[in-house]
Image 1: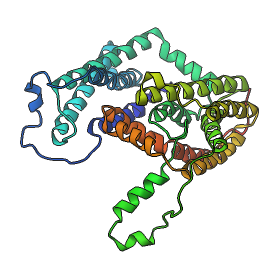
Image 2: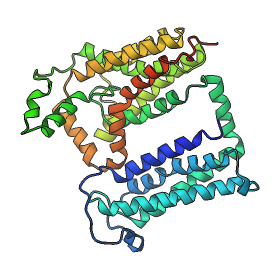
Image 3: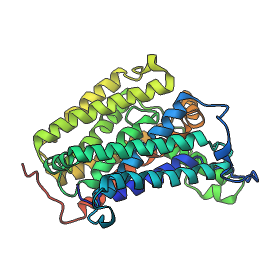
Image 4: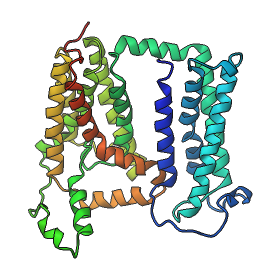
Length: 376
């Protein structure tokens, strides 16, 4: 790992913490109380085990990335004798200040409640992450990851790795079609029509007036197959060899299946975790994996071209189909329920992930330095 590579990740994750802490950014008001008054409050009246765990886990990656970034800096002259201890201290200090700021700002949001318990758990999570980073650094695990990345991925793989790491989180938000990310046109049209209601501009908008038809089983099979095929192709654009591609394809389909089952369990209960696994879905997963295996020997530029075609076809099929009323009720439960903190972000990931991938691949293929073949 490059010595400064963790700083952008730490900054990006800090922005995610800000987003999760202030979501849904609506109905701001001034309660005319000091923003730090929550520090003197007692134990909150309403709390759940989920809230306690989420407040710790949410800050663990922040502490990990901050401590790792500091320890792997090129210049730590003021802490040369104890860079690991200093890394923990800096990470905890930054995490403490960020949590203190977020809890203070939450006083102005009616849907959020500032809590000294949350603040303490956030600091504890930052400490856990920082200690974990220090332990892994001392054990040499970070260097092992660096060597693993050099063996498996090309040097320009950072963007693809980040997108692949975000893919399982995008799948956590329920999708009308399993592995079907990016179905946004119907919602976009509805929101736009509501926004332009009672204005002359509504008549000028090219909104679809035909009634959308549900996907037939064959179209659902193809959507599932493309949903599994797309992340495999994205990995192929940065992986070094055919055997590694094969391992990655099987792992990607397995991860996508497992995360979709987890999403179903969170939506309808553990007993319904596999209720979505209909015959078209099962065949689609197998077909997607077969497509990925057939692409093992294709050069990286070829995989990028097929990836763009697959994305366009996938998004076109998904956005020509409506979402059912039952599925809309499920989305409303997720958007307004206890998962509001985590799944406000997962919702946006589920909507935007394929479009970001499309932009990333277009940018990659436009560069002349992109390797055209697999070196091994």
